Image (cartoon, rainbow, N blue to C red):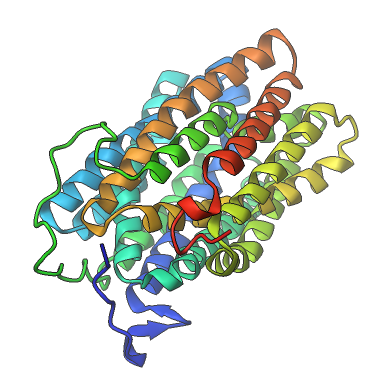
Length: 408
């Protein structure tokens, strides 16, 4: 079903995208500055400051990400049901801001788990409604550009955050708790930046006014969407939390500052390639770009499994940034292409909920493999899952079955 055409006047466009897409990019910039100031320090905080093993780190990150993903289907359904997305987006960013000072006062890993879960609850509430807003304000032929633009702003914050963490580590002499408190400032700026964002444009009269009842059922969705879910779930089962990449860097000899710096490099590459990769998907098809991203992931994880020289960690993190640039925004645009507008926020949420279950399993499995087999094991496992997912993407989603916007 066709989207409501967004206003296209020059006053409604900033930097080549709709004004609301631009503003949501600003919101994500501040939120990711806060989030990524904290994120690369979590492995050190959990394993060193709180003294927990790698398996607990995997449990914490797996539970946190799964909570976020499962909530997305609820928040997406609510947004479709009431026809409004902005309130859920604002609430989500607000909860994420609250979680930062709570993490700072954690004295044991269960409380750190609570703080991380609250942060991810916020992410779960805002994710699907925000993606639906971006899709609603963008014509289909520009969705790759819009989602890529948003990911670029989002990742620019993810570049600044680790650099601020690096500066903070030096200025505070490694006081992680103080840095978590300081991360509250950009988190609150993200909440304030939501205020001028306009909610969804009014739906067409022929469009259903309410979403179907909340359900995890895939009934009513297109066959390409269901197949894409299968591909993504298989990949997600091997895609453990990025904290294991940071832990691997630490295990190969990187100190706290070097871990943060190499994570910043990853985000620089991600930010630089997100928009070009997403625009490319508008032209050659989502499937081709996603396939390249999955193969890059497989190569990088294989590299992390076999590398022994810490110098190669820099190369691997840089190439890893290309993987996420080729898959994150492009994948969201792909879903928007395959799902009618009246069910789009729910579809985004359903996709994230199912992936989140796999993310919990992937992180727990990675932690157990690390502890019981060795540091290389979770990366060999993840590389194999990505290769299988790439093969299924190619064979189960032929170009003719993925819609006019994905002609690859």
